[in-house]
Length: 262
Ligand code: MLT
Image (tube, rainbow, N blue to C red; front, side, top):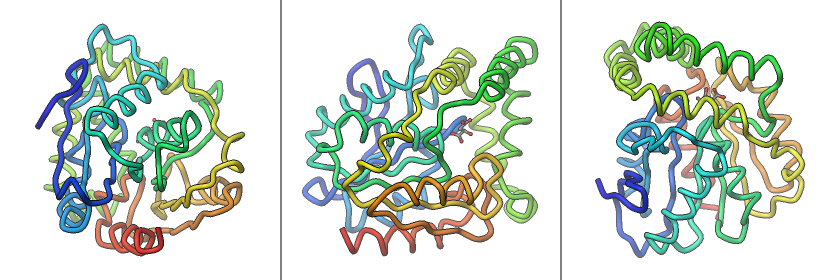
């Protein structure tokens, strides 16, 4: 582990002279979500992952987090490591960050992998749910919130058949700092809608979605894919919202195929 500006925790593997891939995890997770991908791709790529501010080992500071500040952190990371046109791979909240980063400065990147994510901002109902989640955390703590939230992220079969893996993810989420978790909820509630930019994206985009994803179901992601000119959509079986963890084999195969054509 290494830190850059404002103590953002970053993790690297693979040779630095190779094409870089920056992995951005979802909520309420941390960089460990990408273990299978880092293991698999670091032989041929320079793999970088980090903890989004407020989660994992990246301190929340005063907790006043925004999606824009998440993108600022990502740009700081790219500068600090002198990355040359990395490929971005973001899952869910990580996808919101990746898409907004591409909208802010597409020239910085050579490819984009969007996993279980969407371009729309929160609806009114979504914003009210964020507020309820913050209230829940204030009343009952992060542990209880994590228990209620994380279960919805995974396919039922995965939870039943991979208890240890599931518990490991859940236990990490339960230990997160409440100020960071609440900061992320507010940042997501306040994010902009990136739909308008989709048709302007020029870099090749791969979209991956778990067949049982309840948060960003396949039809939502297919609609995103349809708006991007150079895109491919791949549906991953036996997975809910956290495809990289639930079906790493199919996930890695799809990403590998995409990387060959970049
Ligand atoms: C995530 O997995 O990052 C979250 O479910 C995204 C969200 O709550 O919008």
